[in-house]
Image (cartoon, rainbow, N blue to C red):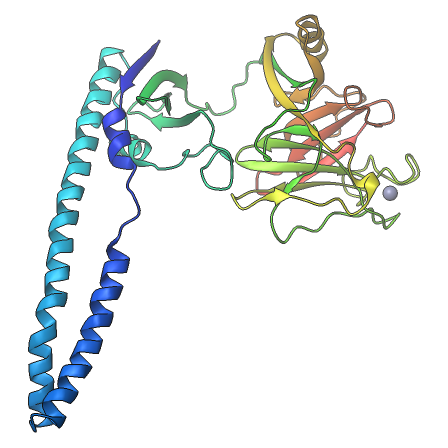
Length: 366
Ligand SMILES: [Zn+2]
């Protein structure tokens, strides 16, 4: 059950303009220093007072102005801090009351407070403000006093509201066989989207120190196939297509394919080193759909029937073409890509992406 709470009050105190105080202090101290020097010289050279007396007179003239500036700053900012705290407290109480009415377990107050005061999009990767286009809604998962329950909070809209929904805490690996399969679908058109969105083709979003991977056998740039968002990382998938089948591009360890995990907010679109290093100039966005199905095959058939262009599978259990070849050192299945929608050449099979959960990722074909 969802519950929506108005939080416009918190939104208003969150938007704090740039403080003018840096500029004011620069001016006050600059003029203070100049006046101090000027008055000291005047008293010493024209009034024939000793250096110490001149300095004391100059200090007596200038110190009150700087002290006054600090006092005014203290008083005005204290007022603002109090207003901010009061507004956030009011909204926190309102959210707590609404959560209690909806039968949710008590929320952890520090997480709730952090969610209400956060200026960017919280723990959702690649949706921050600044260089990336903001997403229409901001989502958090708030812990509760019940360890089995998380509350998904979505902040957005104008006037702002927060929507709370019960979501299950990530349980420690259930032994029961999951019957849901998440299908990756490709948008038929190329669309404007954040450069860090999951997509097929186009150019990869990379950090400043990125080096485009090359095939160790052919010594030429690999082709960028896709990027997949996964657990606050963006996995960039590369494959050697110099002479398909002639190097070990199927092998996760041969150096003829690569999955480069990137993260952070300071990413830009890479320039391909050669024309063959990308499959298309514009990316096709990838989305996910979840189906109740026994296998990826069944889920893909259902997705196709819904008009979805199936591009692969996201998470769950890999649908192996041959036998299970999960790499020993990177055993978390992220996604698989099929050949069709983007015209990839996987030798008739699929490409499987794995991570080791510690920042490294691999690709294998079969
Ligand atoms: Zn190669």
